[in-house]
Image 1 (cartoon, rainbow, N blue to C red):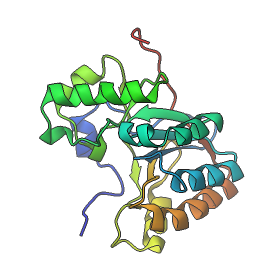
Image 2 (image 1 turned 90 degrees about the vertical axis):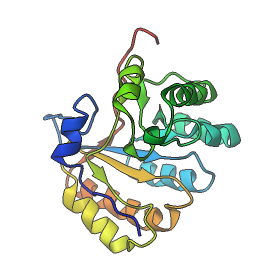
Image 3 (image 1 turned 180 degrees about the vertical axis):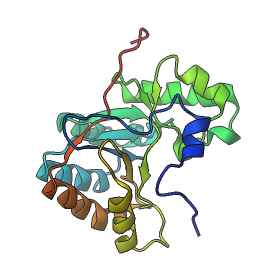
Image 4 (image 1 turned 60 degrees about the horizontal axis):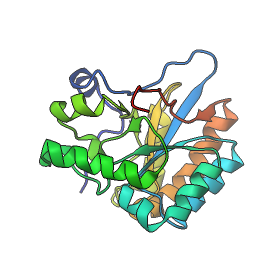
Length: 215
């Protein structure tokens, strides 16, 4: 059974204060939707269709190997006006990976993306401080405020939706997954989450892309 925190806590933010957890914007209530681990045919296409229904923009943190296998899906994401970020080539756990190997894997992902991005999300949210220091020379590290838990097969969709709505606030960075593992739950939760917040006047935006000297 999976164990995770739906809401990122103070301790995590204290350990990694340099990472992005929320985005403060007082102009209007905004949610920053993100999708990890794609692109995947059918799954990513479903996400794109739902986002289009609500005029929502999102950021897709892509696995390089999935981009290699499904490049047409990456083009669909970009053509729909969404942003992409780097999520390593092989979904590496930074805590269990040598720094040099980890950084090479990020670079390999970037090469397969073929589009400039200054956003990086560590798989599982696990990255060593030594790795983070080097990654931040070229990327902003985007964590999250709310983890939906759509990947947890033991978490009923109704509970996933309830927790996501409960913890999502203006400025929240929210994580869904456009992956096969998350697909059964995500497809039930995402449309209702979008409808809930749209009815309450929220907008959905992509995480902004900072400009780095290297790009």
